[in-house]
Image (cartoon, rainbow, N blue to C red; front, side, top):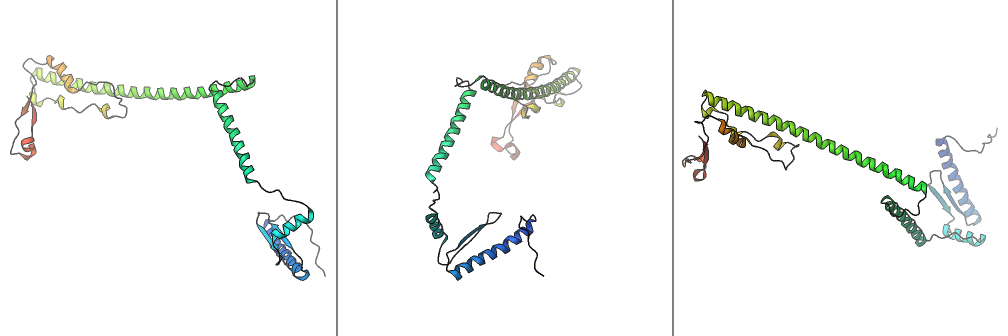
Length: 254
């Protein structure tokens, strides 16, 4: 019983198609070699798979280049040679045209070289410019809003700091007038820490701020007439290393 006839059509299954290609490629190259050896023929075979991989065979006494030249001479045909200089020139011309178009577009965005535009082109350009301006304005409003928020935060910090300072000044004034506490027990306003906003990321330079010592000088005339403040340098203790020896000095409030 003979083998059934195989229908010649494309094999849909990729695995079966690859297996069939490998088998038949080997058979074709084997037949080409047999033809070249048995008949002393000049044979050349070039095969490209579906994935682009190349397979070739040439009879032992020849080369593919010689066979191609012989084919061109026999058929009086010539393959067009690739001119690399011409390709480079064409590519440079294309890039130059693109640069010219970009420069022309930039000039038109700045209001120059509009004489060659039609009414529709000018309308399209106007819409593009309006869209760009709207985006720029939106970004500007966003930055202004952020600055306003930062200023409001700074204002709240200043208000809280001033409230704290004035409350401490009033407490010291009341204590001094009533004579309930000694001056040494009063809150040392001059030693208060600097305002918190001075080290905050929301602080912006350029504005002047009142320190606790400035507030003390403005509030001092309202204290009791017998109460006063004066800074006097203290005598250094030459025997005490903590005072820095001859270089140690300090200020005393009394």
